[in-house]
Image 1 (spheres, one colour):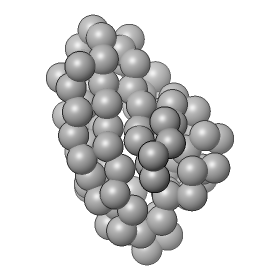
Image 2 (image 1 turned 90 degrees about the vertical axis):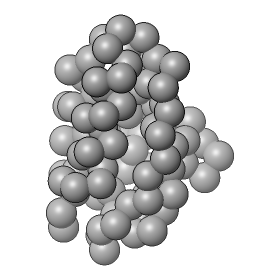
Image 3 (image 1 turned 180 degrees about the vertical axis):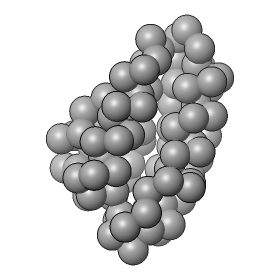
Length: 87
């Protein structure tokens, strides 16, 4: 199991487009990828769960990857959340 913490730095937070892109990225991996947001476990493969979590600008979240290619998955998801969720 691999974990990392991220702070969302995007004025609009994780809205529909980046939530869908994150889910597509997560589906590329065989491992389980979850986010912990405000104490809630969110399946990173579900754009609906991501959007319903209400992830806004400056929200702190934890990424948890477990299984095959977990290190690569963690790196890719962390990079996406830190650099690719433009408004």
